[in-house]
Length: 423
Image 1 (cartoon, rainbow, N blue to C red):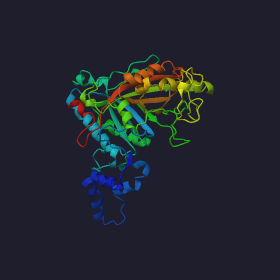
Image 2: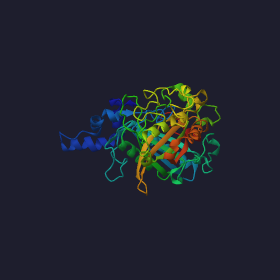
Image 3: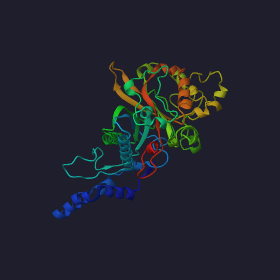
Image 4: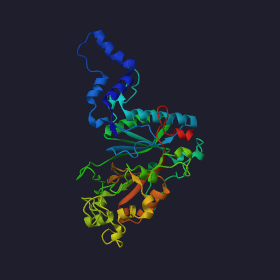
């Protein structure tokens, strides 16, 4: 993400306001002869555009933002179902979704209108929408490719409905969906505002199916590179592939042309979203020795057992019988670090969630597991089947989520996410 140039921001703000804003602002001032009028919207935007709100990611390009983008502090994952009868209506809805998302991610002043007209924006963020690191990633579920819209032949080869694995407790009303919106930003109000605006934009075309809000734990060190913690208290994401390594991302994340998928999928990626409930009350009664052996890392430092720092190689080759790090430890099963399993790695972008209390008064907390991979069967499902043998499986229950395909980004003005599907 990069900060918006202040001149660029103000220029865009003025363009959004247009002549109507000038008539309501400057014209009124001249008529009244006022000399100390309040600053106009552009000046207000300049004064309020703090550095923490100025970062932005390009919506247009080749790959969608929100995949390799550094993880923001807050998120909402919203699954939608298409409710229109024709492909043409679906196309128009997806266009409007993409155009509105593009505008929100770049920021700008809210247009002023006649007092009796419905406002064009909820106004939750005030007179301007600062970009705040916002990304909106749009992905499609397998059900969008059923018989309704004539898209069956264009379905990505590896896109299926997410199955129930052996120890899952999936709830139907928290699974699947035709479209997945991943809305991520640095501040919570930006996420809430964006979700509200996108749902308003797509009303009558797409209807919400399920939603989960996520947050990232604060970065508490000891170094700027230290991973944040999940709700079991352990660092999460230590062994994640480096998203800045373009060659590695080509091997693990992006679908390649001519790889067996339809042409429109090139440059996209398969997305896995899993709502994993963590039975935290049960976990909190487990001894520290047992916890660390289930994970395979020290809870405080994040170092592999027997190691000194978080990013140290666990050196399984020197511990073939699991005397230091048990063979059933999470880190060992998730990433065995062998030549045979290198292409099974996934790019994870997880968030914590807290949904309050369930009907029995227990904490409904857990992990929003989000991963991007080139091939779900080769990568996520292979890893998931290995993890069915881990002891930590007794302390978690996957309850929702789905499989989706995130196509490449809008190529430029006038293009939209998913346009290639209808070409």
